Length: 620
Image (cartoon, rainbow, N blue to C red; front, side, top):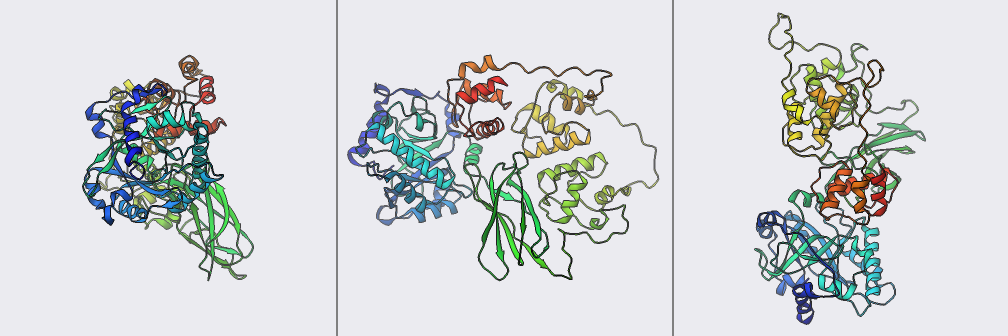
């Protein structure tokens, strides 16, 4: 960090990085070496402050982006003073498409309340880091302010928890192994749980780390040269892939929202929807707020707050209005997803002569036996919204939220295939008539021919090797590719939201348990082998095999603490216990699975695996 790394202080930290392996007071853990090819694929970034703007020089952020840099840390404050280039640096980096975060250069002090004061000043200057592309805020620890190790740990913990409370993001700690060992001490257990951005200027493949900590970002040089910047600049790496960095950089969200078209004065109406990421992932247990703007007013007022459900991320408000008004649902963001606002819905005030309207009533149709005939001239595709989408979803037995997303498209394709229609995921007249109970018009021969016996699908040889493989969202590999080919999806080998939706649609159409998990029964059905009965006692079904006891495999790790960025055998054992693809890396996907497990077992849902979580996993 250039502001303080000048003169003796900078030389002291640089010397510490070189001498860290010989410092007896510090327990150093070296990350396993990786090949040069692996290192080259890890995303690169920089960090900047006033020192990269000599004599007011500008930064060409597009040139920075074109040089292969994908993220930047920008100094926001030092003490309670705001960096004068914060606003222009942030705007330029955002316009260039760089992931970004602000950092605070700490000036620790014994003065009462100084940690909270500096934390509030930082958030006031840098914001809540809740937009798409925002990385987590950073505490830069390079000076001790004359505090003892214990006092410095308390000061840092206070700053971190204050910022987390104000922003909803878990902050990152920037420091060097030398400073950590000399000034903070090896017993800083309360700080080890935070992610680290470590400063170690070396040509090694990975930085040296203090015991118990893992790095998320690594500042590997302080003398770099990057196109678009006229002075030397610090160079950084992310400990993961480009996709994992994208997941850390706050993916966007989209609240769907339905509301009544009108309400009688004083009567209650239902406002509901779902909160999903832009890729269709449910954002569960998130706080959403209903806002109202009364007709004739320009001010939005908070009406009510609720939490999305734990599985589908649905929400519902019941509210009685006294005047015509417009409504929005807002999500203020959290640690994993960015803030967002729904579309605005206007609700009229019904008069005494106008009966209360219901959401999007369907006009009279030709016959009561064809409830979908009204929409037969309406074409729907992914991205469509409204009453027609709601009617379609009800016909397909989906959650009816009025938004045609990836899950609805997958269900439409599955329905079209099962009825021998063109499986394009677009709902036109033929699909509507089939849904309404009217046979689709023949498209080739008008003279019906006897239907030949359907040829068995030659899938068994391709799927039999995987019948003992369990797949779920997040799985990768050849088994996923075979599954996608069997479902006639684009075979990319990754089990994402689209593959899960197609699996659920297939399971429903074959009367299997529609959980989106591909186990032996689903595999056998796909391979044209009938699933075994699960209820009738004649023939009596074989009992499901008992899960292998996991306690012996997990007991060795009960004293190991894991968090995002951890690697190794303990992470592999954790991923197997959670039924994830076991790659030995604790990334955002593993953290999300840990939090979901902790919530379902009523543990502290912090994404950190300690003794309590290990023991709970071992008892399953």
